[in-house]
Length: 242
Image (tube, rainbow, N blue to C red; front, side, top):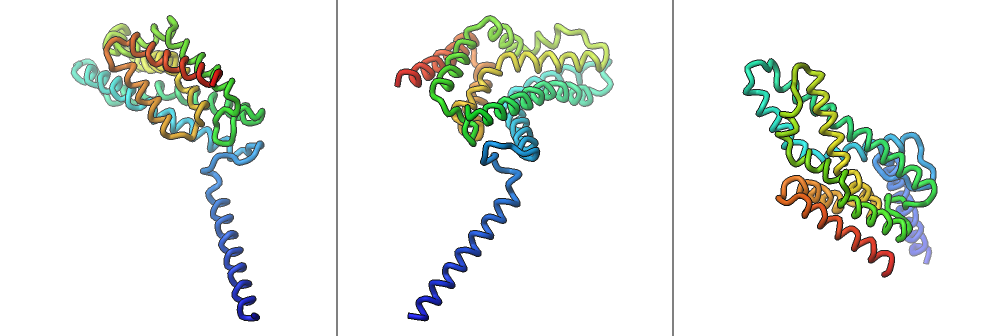
């Protein structure tokens, strides 16, 4: 009996030590985890900002790469261009600056949502009605003139680049700024869908990235964007009634 008691005591001590080690491990890596309570610390806010920035860069990089490659191909064949690679770097910095600003804004929006329990700790809406309104709003935006105008610029980068005369690095920065703004105007509503399934849902990060690419590459751009819009409105309506 005493031997069994000693054995049970040793098992409990071992389990306790294991739990302590796991807790210590979680504490060490807490900077890389989602905030687990209603109060974000400064470190939480910094980490979440970095997460949003990395996520937006990863989602926009495939379409941005095509634009940057086209720009470099055009500039490297011009005798008057001294350093096309430097111009591509300037273009990239300005383009991704726009998405950095958007990422910080989205992170702050998540922070506000989190404080008011609009989203859970994984960054997903806690209310079906809010999720439905977001989906329907994003879907209707797909039919708007602003969406069409921005998408046209994104789908025709050659005409966009040739439409701006480049005399200095200032003009290169201007192209990066404008292209970043057009891409933001085209895709911002799709990015908000992340709040429907959770900003940490990598499957939906991939799906939205594919949707962004499809809008820019598949022929009949209006048909493609409106098809996505129809699906979003249908999804939002389903959440309301079912």
